[in-house]
Image (cartoon, rainbow, N blue to C red; front, side, top):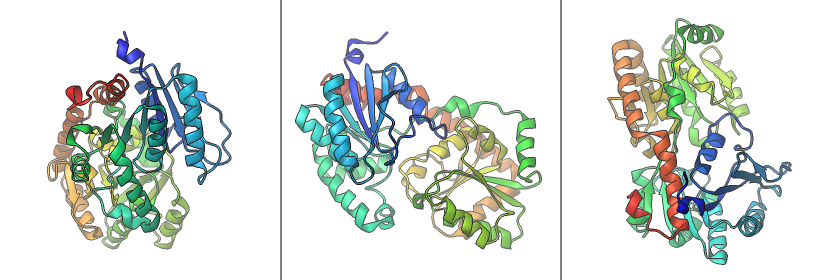
Length: 399
């Protein structure tokens, strides 16, 4: 039974991806449908490629996605135009944006025009990490400065870890208006039992039956630092380690990755699984012996949580997202440097000690279950919108 506040909450979300329409590679579509069960209406304006002509599409009885059509450079103008239409047509009364940059600016303009409350989300560690700025200094430098302005006008702020919250506070954002809420993870999916026959079959398929298997999951983008993984693999090959690395994912640098694997002659060690549906990911995780994570910056390592729920020990780079999840030395290892030798040392330790792997995997699964409850996270995120739409003090229930 919906409360009166829930019945009156109609949300406009401004996002940067169209994957909620049909993409089965993540759980984003299902997750947003679940958000919709807590509010009256949720309509998402999502950046899409220029050739996309999909109209407003209802993915559930009260959740819709409207991809943009005008391309990258006209996205802000088109999203603003769509926002005007959708707010009026569907009587939307609260705005949430995916980042404090372009989507944040669009949301801020709509807030000022319509007098609505706005929640500004931050799905990475844009302000607590210096690596983000180094990736594309000019473009991201402009984003950084734009965000400094946008943050001054938000009504509430969602970040993914405590470190980003602390930086927001130093920038002048009142602490009581900042909520740490990581991306919900479908824990039941990754806690599910996978038959040993299915695991053996996957290992045979990739000729990894007698090897120590690492798995890496993510989009092939600069932020994931896949070149570091290749350096780790090269070191392992030089040491003649019986190692196999599953790389699950695709992305803008996939072709460059494939060329690099061929150039370094790592085809026998690195298995490119390509795109793996979110439904099939648990099989891949449970087929592996450990999870490796090489991201150079990240607000929340969702795949780290998925791996821990799957019972895997984790070897991860030192990011704010990883520090918020992994108990160093207990559920895995946080490698403090970007040196492949240091990553490989942790991998070797896990490969040589099955008891340590089981202990870390078991502790990691327990920790992830206790701290990343899916239903509670969904409800907490939606509750922000409900409180904002009814002009209640969010902090009284969420702080």
